[in-house]
Length: 163
Image (cartoon, rainbow, N blue to C red; front, side):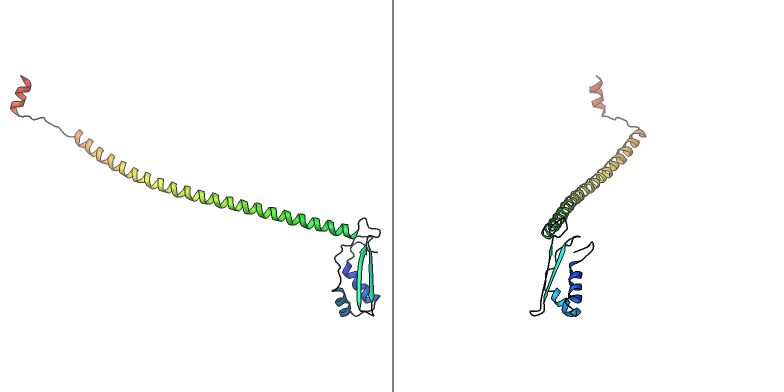
């Protein structure tokens, strides 16, 4: 009967070495040929059969006093593994989707950055043109404010205008 912490392989190896009185290499060779995939629960019965005439070894597990059959335990483990696989795939897919969204955001931001850089260059050009216009107008205004202008006309046109 299996106890807590027992391992099917260790129990089978112990049987082959002590009960069947085989050498370690021979016991290992026989173990490599049988299925020992059942997960043991305390109370399971583990069965062994060695036939020296045909040099064959068989082992299997039955429910015994354990609360579940070996088949139910195996199916529960398979469901757990499948659920873990599905969860991992979902997480991977979500990460992939998030990465794609992030890459799309980066592309959008880069395009926006280039547009803003273009706008800045245009605004700097406009600023330089306006500063040039301000300098020209300031110079013109200063010239006009500091100058005295006379209106000179021909004598004839002044007479006609005054008569």
